[in-house]
Amino acid sequence: MCKSSHCKPCKAFMPKYQRMAEILSDSLLLELTGDHSAETKKLMVSWGVKSTPTFRMYRNGEMVATTTGARESKVLPVLIEALKDGEKGKNIKAEDLEAPTEDDSDDE
Image 1 (cartoon, one colour):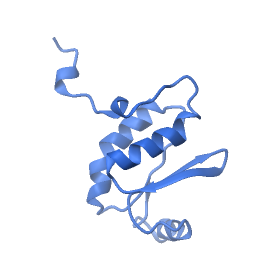
Image 2 (cartoon, one colour; image 1 turned 180 degrees about the vertical axis):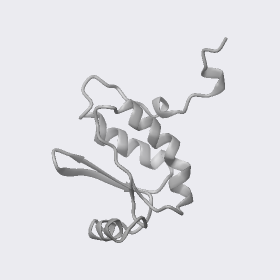
Image 3 (cartoon, helix red, strand yellow; image 1 turned 45 degrees about the vertical axis):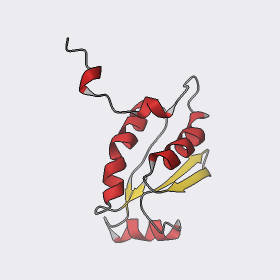
Image 4 (tube, helix red, strand yellow; image 1 turned 30 degrees about the vertical axis):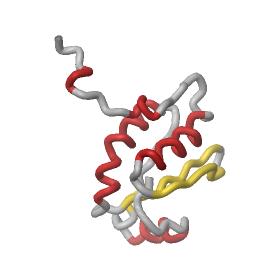
């Protein structure tokens, strides 16, 4: 996920992104903060990142998908479709990415 440190949509999307990282533990999910340094800014420019968050999915060194924005209904289907083929034996659905609520806890 390409993001900037002051991007409110990026911050709002982080719980879903972190949940995806847990589910897709065999995949490598990275965060690149474009305003972190001159090098990260240069990398995002070279990738053509014009807005944040931007998601770029790779398989075997080839980019297989890209999407922008933090609207779950747009981003999650692209991420799931691009990554699930690399996750053998995993059947990932958008609802799998829902963060657990207090009602889901086993504290009873």
